Amino acid sequence: MQTNRKNIFLAIGILVAGIFLGWLFFGGNGAGQDEHEHAANTEAEVWTCSMHPQIRQPEPGQCPICGMDLIPLSEDEGGLDSDMFQMSEDAMKLANVRTMTVGGGESARELRLNGKVVVDERNDYTQTVHIPGRIEKLMVNFTGEKVERGQTLAMIYSPQLVTAQAELLQAQEIKESQPELFQAAKQKLRNWKISEAQIERMLAEGEPIERFPIRSDVSGVVTELMAEPGDHLEQGMPIYQIANLDKLWIQFDLYESDLNWVEEGSTVEYTVKSLPGKTFEGEISFVDPLLNDNTRVATARIEVPNKDRKLKPGMFVSGVVENQLDSSVEDRIVIPESAVLWTGERSVVYVKTDMDKGAGFEMREIILGPALADSHVVESGLKQGEQIVVNGTFTVDAAVQLAGKPSMMNPNIGEEKVDVSEEDRSALQPLFSDYFELKNALVNDDLETAKASARQFQQTIDQLQVSAMSDEVGSLLKIHFPKLQSVTDRLVNAANIDAVRNEFIGLSNTMINLAVSTRPMEGMYIQHCPMANSNQGADWLSMSSEIRNPYYGASMLGCGEVTDQL
Image (cartoon, rainbow, N blue to C red; front, side, top):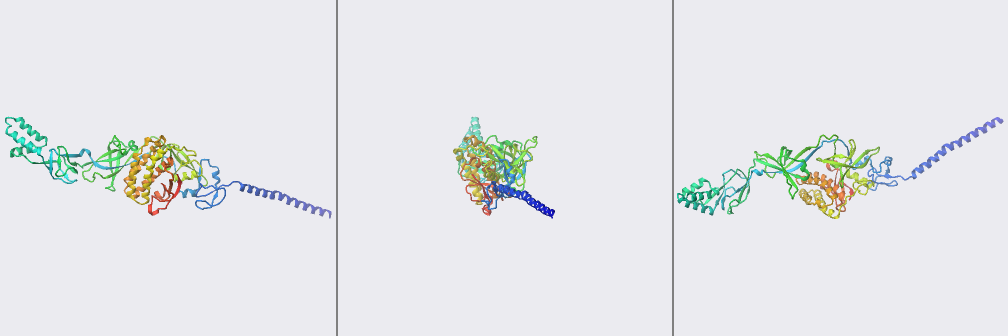
């Protein structure tokens, strides 16, 4: 009986000990876990928006931009380099950010030229009168008429010639006693290009000829009438401009930045606007050694046969000269122009690093080599296989700036600010005013005003005194001006408004880079349309935050968003 009691007490003791130990291990651990979770929750947590990663808040809520629920900041970003910025895959898609893997490319520079058909100067002849007098009649009285050598062009009455004939007739009577006088009288008429047959005729008739014909010295086409009936002309004054159009010149405009890429012997493939669907090829026979002081343009010409007369002086021509760069350089890196941002004298790109959730972007300074058609050779700063942003570069830069990390648009963090004086800003403002005129014309679907604004923009570039500006600004303009000159030349000669809008993409990219570096005007906005440029997206500058899309005009006037304010 006593043994049973002992067993009962022992079982109760074991049960109490088990309960205590269970509470100690499991209950105690649970309390510790609660405390651990509470401690974790009380740590400062950062919430962001998957669509707008620049948003950072210390507590959950909604994005102030799009209204989406905020999410905890990815743990991946906690391990990022301090200068690196992360974007989620959704944010990259929304911003239409595209990247490419850096690799070798064809190192050929395709230089586009514009020109026109002109008369071969060697076959352009000014027909003058050989006899002083009054024009009685024009036998050829309109431009474009063909004439043959020796053909009568006009009739002229000359009192001096009548007097000279009278002197000849008088000298004829005494030629036996004074032959020198007779020969001198005849020579005077020969100096006026009076033929021997005409002289013999007046001697035979014994009377002066009152009206003499003006005969063509060459064969060709009359390109200009330079006199009218009744005009009194002195010897040597012009009466017609006559050109032989069997051989013509095509003269292309060369800007200073293009001169090193074109030389005598270069092959040009060209098209003539009035002969659609046909491509011609010619060889440059002459490059003008002098620049025009007003336009800062030289000319390069090719000679073309024109027996069929399909080419006519004044026709517009577009040509392409392709130059292969040094092929001995291995692993040459070529990147699109859209990937490059300029700040002062430096060029930067955004390098992408793949992550578990999205991608990290870091600004990288590079050194550029020769400019190609729409790309650049990279001398240093990038390696084969690295990924860079080629579309949406300004969007990435704006997001990086808002995140407080080094960016091209934020010169106070990791970047030198270009020192721009008030005088330099004032000098640059007309350039931006012309740009905005062009942009507004595209907003209004007005082709003629757009082309007129492009011509004014071109004149402003030519008149800008770069040498009078500071070294920093001058160096910056030397980077951008060749592109501005090239694109405005194509804008002026664009056939339709779609062609103007296509060229406006490159113009805007260059102007945005220039604006970011110099800040010439207060209150400028960088705006972006994701659908422009064949859905690759395109940017432009505006003086208003209101979206008025120059790439679509009235068809999609409000398409786009503000990506940054300068």
